[in-house]
Image (cartoon, rainbow, N blue to C red):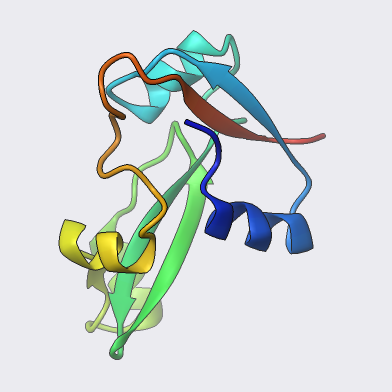
Length: 112
């Protein structure tokens, strides 16, 4: 599996990055390990719902979203998007963190 076309189109406009192929992994930190990079250098996206729309939070694999802190900054209406919502937004992406067994995966890392 390569990078999703929708995501690549956006990143190509705004962010320098590298794509690294790797075996499927169950988490972003395991992906960092498989790619032999720090979790600080691996970007993971978390889709949030707010005011009837969506936000994409991009953070290092070694970090976690703290909804309580995010709600303090953005308002109580911020929540995680459901898998169904994510499927509708990113129809060209495999569902969940683990692609189908045997499929190669790709990872986006920031470019220094």
